[in-house]
Length: 82
Image (cartoon, rainbow, N blue to C red; front, side):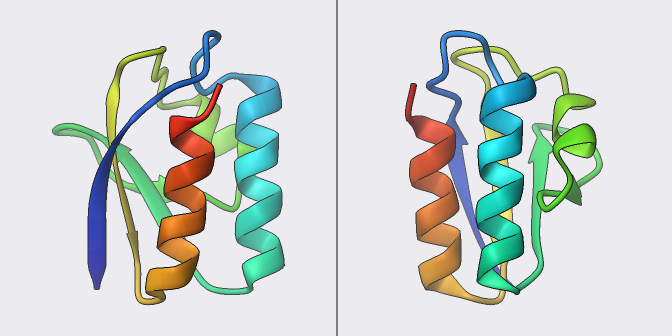
């Protein structure tokens, strides 16, 4: 499984709107993607609620994992954007 570390770019962190955009993109891709904060357990990136439970604010580093590299790259871009 491929993984990448990404810095959260959103000024509000991974809160409601950014989390929803990420979850929608994961659902549209149709492949599993997980997201975790350093030292934390990974959660389903296809669930906005699970993403918000991470409490990742702007500048936090998160680890994304997936078996599909193009999807991983797309989700990484969303996490890094504001």
